[in-house]
Image (cartoon, rainbow, N blue to C red; front, top):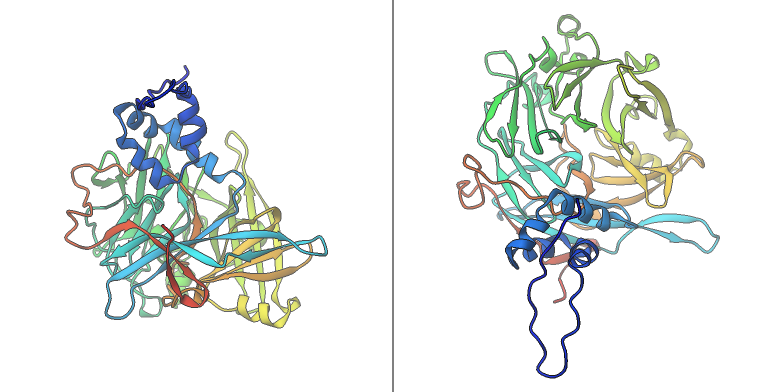
Length: 456
């Protein structure tokens, strides 16, 4: 059934005849889907009909598709508050693909980054994951088990109710070992859900679910597998095609071999269906079954990153292809990078940082992969030519925060008008005790950290 919309009345000019109004579907489908997200949110106040139209699932999806069409990837990063200040901000910048005189193309960063939202009372806020989930982003406060769900395009956000603390591991690995939290979307329920897998202070395995619409932390329907949380280290799960995926690695969390073996799980990859809330196991590539790896999403596929940069100067990306039915899927090698074969400057830069994860393909070149490090640097690597170049560094714009062990704190940005449902139990900007406040950004930051006001 075609959707109908009501066009708000317009004033008739004093002389002559008023031009015929645009068809209602043209106004919504062809015009409003192309305006910036913050403007689309403001237009909801025009009339009830527009509010209903601009908050519908159909419009949210159409707007996201229209804004993304033909646009280069945007990278979002968090600039923490300076010493003695509580003001911080999230910024985004666009990667550009430009044709060179020799006919080839290369990626280069924009000259400035746009302020998405300004944040007050942000302590140790971090991005959870490397891309939004249906327009929303999960933020975590690292010093406490506190989480926020927000739309970085519109500034809408909610703070989730407090949850139980997770048990820490050995001092070598920090206080966030036996815990992992991620954001997913359940299409059957029509809502975003936050899932938290952790080991509580009584050494019990727990998995809790929080529905953004339904509200309230509750136990997951499925029983968390034995020892699963003992292999977590704070990194968020990957959410893809209705499932969460965790890498369960007890060898990374325990220095004693007997402990690592005692807490070993059937397979090193754990899955959870967001619809049925049942757990399962995924077998990694046979060639890398005993390797230490990280999980990510790469162009719509589950990606396994074998990071041996600090030992053998090698880095591999494997992607998993799945088919309908009960097929376990198959793994294939996407690329293998030998850092020793790269020029010294980029080789040294890529070798730094605790972790490096793929973000997606570079603009205009599907074979080129964007790789982000925990040192807040992004590289574009072309497997065909074995060439890599740095395309972004947070240090060029702001004072970069400390390296966060379990998180990148850098991600892809997606312009969206997805709303954040507020219900009883949510802690909003007015009721979160002053813990976190957001407002739309109003400026840009140029290279070398020079802030300039946005043009009015």
